[in-house]
Length: 545
Image (cartoon, rainbow, N blue to C red):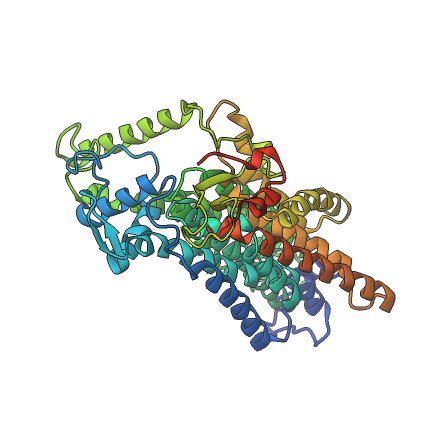
């Protein structure tokens, strides 16, 4: 709709005789829908086939030799036992005594996912006895969620950029990132956190399209009936319609976003930061949509029309979902603090609240030194990756064929072509938002900022590089937006399109080659010690396990 949308509001609707004043095809109503919610690409089948192909590549890489290396690595020693306790007792069991509750510092949902896969494929019980295939049991869920994240990000990027090519590009970047790859092959919580946030991101983008399409349709339908009599003032309903715009109606994808954000908090508390950022962005988008639709007071319109449902979806629903992830603790009797204040309903809530206070105290005072710890600013330059496993086979051991010996390592190292370029792309996104107010640039900046910047507030806390995993999808979307700018619009000159396509292809080739080069130290392959040293580009990459 043109700048005269406000006038259209006052003229729309029915006349005093009740006749429907419909707009012809190609009218301002169609232009408004185009501005609020541009059409998706017409290659729907190809879009799904391409996305599933990218996901299949990701799945093969993540599930291939998933049980290697054998044994519990890094924090698997904690989470696998917590998952076993949930599977057998409904709460985390003290792994030293095999009886009684354990004090754990993360909510249970991620460990419930691990418990489900342990139930299917195998586990090691508290006494150390293996059942089935233990490594497959506690890593299968991670690989599944890491693969799912690729599919969801591919489809989300396609919707954001209205391009199947750019959607698959984003999916390939996530597929070929070393950190996401390694986290998908180890039984710790961060891959569940990232995937939950990617699902929330997808729902947020779908809700943006759905809500704007509904808003455009209601604007096109016109103001409420019961307008002013001939020559009189418009009715109050019509005046509110002109001033604030119409109601957007039911927002099912907004409900889904709230559920995903609450579930993400049920994996790790740090999802709360991203919830705040994405929720604020959703409300800002509502304001922008009403402004585009011609509402005279778009801010007040969003507060009046959208805020109540927004509060339910982004405040109440995440809280309820988060609490639901603690169901096992509430319905059993042996959990930590479960009967600290007695047996009644309120006593249970009192004990649970104290439990949360104890968890908060643990995180606030976590400052024990660790050989693999790092600072948030170092994450973006890959200064200190985390070693999950390291072994030094000699000639003839575990496939070693080098006289000088070999190395076998699992190093949680991001793909430099993704992380370094992604960090630079943040500057491009800031420029894009300032110059064009591009909503996709805003999403990248808000999503990255809300998942990364809060860690800067805790300089003395013990932190690790894999804490940056939830920031990765937003870095990738920033790279994808930059790639779209490089390719240029469809009506750009052939020279511009050719240079853009060449740059696009060369960058993607660099990502593939970089992943292939580092793959041996991501996937515990036995390689000559000299080859391992070639891959240790910086002293900080040599970390004792």
